[in-house]
Structures are given as C-alpha cells and as structure tokens.
Amino acid sequence: MENLPQPPTRTTVWRLIAFAALTLLSGCASGEFGEIYPSFVNASVHDWVGRGPDKIPPSVFEFTDDERALRDLAYPLIEPPFDRQKWYSVAGEWGLFHTNPAEHQKYFERLMEDPHKSSSGRYAQLNEDIRNDSARLAQFFETAGRVLDIDQKRMKSLDYVSALGKGERQSALRRVRENAHVVDLVRRSLGDRVAAYQFALERLVVVIPSAQAVDAERLLRQLQDQIARYDQLPPTWQREPSLARSN
Image 1 (cartoon, rainbow, N blue to C red):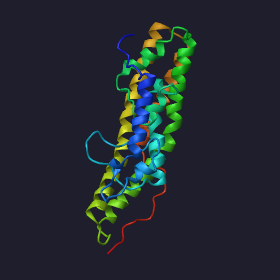
Image 2: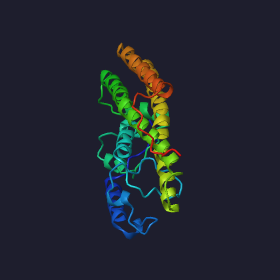
Image 3: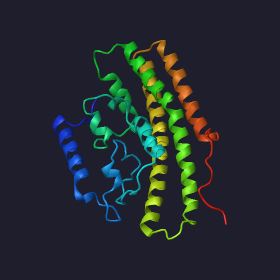
Image 4: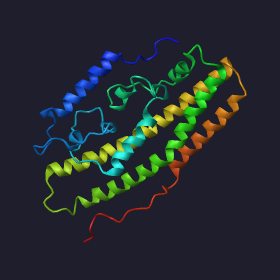
C-alpha cells in the first residue's frame, strides 16, 4: 500500500489554522466597495466550498441561510470518507487540506491499511460509508434545488433593479456561479465515490470474501439509484414566487 496521500503534520495544521485566522482579521479582506468581505467577518467553516481555483474574487454578498446550508451539506459529500474524524480533520473543514478523492484505489488502500481490523470490520466500514452518503443526499439536493431556483430568479431580477451598480452585478453573478459550482462539485464527487466503493467491494471479494459482500452490493446499488433519481427526476421542492417584476 504505497504512495498514500499523507495527512499534514500537527505542526503544519496549526500553522495553517493560525495563518487562516490572521487572514480573516487582516485588512487584506477588503471588498469591492471598500468594505471588509462579509464572508470573512461572518466566516463559517465551509464558506470556501464552491470557490473555484481561479483568481476571481468571491462574491462580497453575505450568504443566505440556504446558501450556507448548501455548503455545510456539501462538505461531507466531497470530503473523502477516510479523512473523517481524524486529528487533522479540522484543517480539511476549513479548506486548508485536500485529498484527491478521484483516485479510486485509495479508498480500498485506506480500508486495508489497519492490520488490526477484522474482515467483518472492513465490510462494516464500507457499508457505513455507503449508508452515510445515501442518508445525506435528500437534504443536500432539496437545498440545492431551492438555491438554484432562487438564483434563476435572481438573474432575471437584475434587469429590473434600478441603478444597479457594476460591483453589485458582479457579486450577484459570482454568487450564482459559486452556488452552481458547489452542486457540480458534489455531483462529480458522488461519481468518484461510487467508483471507489465499487473498486473496494470488488477487491474485498477477492482478498477477504464474505457473505457481507451481498449487503454492500445492495447498498451500493441503492446509492446509485438515488444519485440517478436526483439527476433525472424533477425536484420535490416548492418553487418560490418570482423575484422579477413583469413589465
């Protein structure tokens, strides 16, 4: 089991956290209107989720309740299961440490790396991780539906707002893009996770065959069906009244 992504050292984690804290308090957090970014002043742990790798500044608008909930619900679905509840997890929560979840074999390697875990324990861990993902989908996608719907109305409303400043328009467009990026991140992550779970299950059947594989296969099929349903069927949320005024 070589070349596993290594977690940061404790010293590195605390340095990153200290740096983040100083950044939040520094004057470098100024917004486009000469203000401190509201997202820095009222920073929540997952506010960074959805900000792209490019150098475009984030929206200076504060998050709605649904936008913040969207990010909180997204993080467990993009965080690799093997990084949960580790001593370094706080760095990941704040976006200071990332592991690439797209390398499907890494999940299996992490599942097998504890020499003291029994074969039944490995299957139980796989089943628990799949169940956890399944349980999180409904709330995330219902919240995503509300956010994306209101963003459509926000875009239409831009044409009806009087004396809309350039900075305000830019921040609105950036927030819409950030929200869409959160949903895209989760969709891609779910595809990677299903592939990782499938890879692990197939290897477990060869390495430590057990009747527990039947349960894992059933749970994985249910997760795949859930993902497909959220990709294809209309959302179940109630549409809000339009924000845009008609002519």
